[in-house]
Amino acid sequence: MSLVEKPTSSALVSPPPTRRPRPWWRRVAYEPWLSVGAVIGLLVGWQFAVDGGALDHRLWPSTTDVLSEIGIMFESGELQKHIWATLQRVLWAFGVGAIAGIALGLAMGMFRPVRALFDPFVSALSVMPKVAILPLIYLAFGGYGEAPKTFTVGIAVFAVVAINAMGAVRNIEGALLEAGRNFGAKWWQMFWHVVLPGSLPTIFTGLRLGAATGLLVVIAAEFTYTNDGLGFLIWSSWTTLSTTRMFVGLIMIALLGVIITYGLQLLDRLALPWKNR
Amino acid sequence: MSAESKPASDKIADDSQPRAKLIAKGAGCYFPTRKGEVTAFHDVNLEVAEGEFVCLVGPSGCGKSTFLRVVAGLLPASEGQVRIVDVPAPNGKAKPINSMVFQEYAIFPWKSTLDNVAFGLQMRGIGKQERYEIARRWLAKVGLTRFEQSYPAQLSGGMRQRVGIARAFANDPQVLLMDEPLGALDAQTKLILQEELLKLWEEQRKTVLYVTHSLEEAVLLGDRVVLMTAHPGTIKQTYKIDFPRPRNLELTSHPDFARQVYAIWQDLQGEVKKALEEQS
Image 1 (cartoon, rainbow over the protein chains, first blue to last red):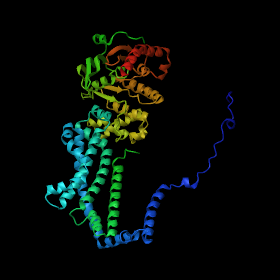
Image 2: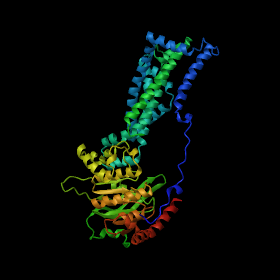
Image 3: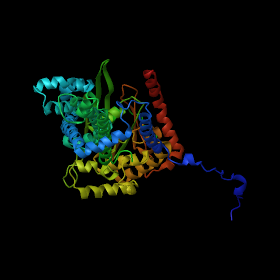
Image 4: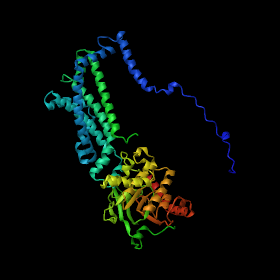
């Protein structure tokens, strides 16, 4: 049809490169198995080390010792009691501290006078090792009851969450605020449609950090003047050299940390469908 | 097509113009800084007629974006006056004074395309059904119907700015303000959007103040090009662009187009050099 002669394709186009299939060890997603394997390896190695006498059995319980101790404590209900005590303190403190922290942090981010007023306290608290204020709180509460511990954990969560919420507001892109104003948003619409959704990603980061801090402080608080909770379990077992029980406490607090972190991550994904899709 | 060599300040006295929609008289804007006061722009006199498309060009840092923000009411003028003549719609309802298209798009990452386009309407309390109907009409015009449920992160730069443009048009403002709306896009996407913008505007004939640093873009889109001096900015000259409408990209291949662009460049280049010297 056309007068222009088309070049024959075979002459000009090089044949598709024959790719060798990738070897099996590159095709398998082995990283997760490496992680799982490392943990299993540690547990098995530990067992052999104790059984073989490399670790002193009077001080270092074997893997199976710890596992059977978990079973025993679970059956007697003691384990649940300690977990529940810690969980109650953390959840109360985290709930109240996080809500207060978000509220004050957002207010500090949005209103200069509020920021000027509270910044010295929130900044000081957020850089301070939170455990350090525990004696002060005991002093303030005039006793050793439940309240000062929960309160200390709450303060710790509050400071971390507040400083992040404030930063979240201040880091919202200026053009988005301008767009909100330009399209006629009133102040409450600004808050609801621009400031709050724009701050949520950083607020969630604050919640994760706050939860980690909360766990840290609750364990430290339970080292003192109490008779339940995972911190108490760990500390009292150490003082009586019941090291098997100490390991049970350590494993439980680690699990608690993992569950809380993953829970918050899930919440993050559900609440922010517009991020990372 | 020739450069209109009258200084801009003379324009104010000219009564043969159709009625002015946007008026700036002796407008200036100063910012206090640690090193003293900095002038963004001063002595700006400009009138934009109803339905006119005016492009503002000038070297970077000349205050053209700041001027646009003063017109938008996002910043106060330090002196003089800048106002948009508020004319209610024929049915007596108030119409939004101005809507802006931002260089960085400034569409909300947490809102779907549909909700972004309907944003201005939602802020004005227009019900869901009506505002979505209007927003969908604009999404169709910018070819984003398939993406109405997508979030901005899932869109390309060109698509995001289409959302920004549709959001401004859907709000049906009396004046459209555009701050280098295509400045962040790659060269080819820019051409596509220039043509889309031409088509939209020629259909709607809104009053537009358009900031750009591309002379080609200004001459292609505008009825008038206003040239600003280097910092501190003021208006140096205005050029009437008489190419017939409807226009399209083909215009850019016309020798008269090139001559017009070059004529403006000859006046602009001195200002650009001044701006460069000041920065160094």
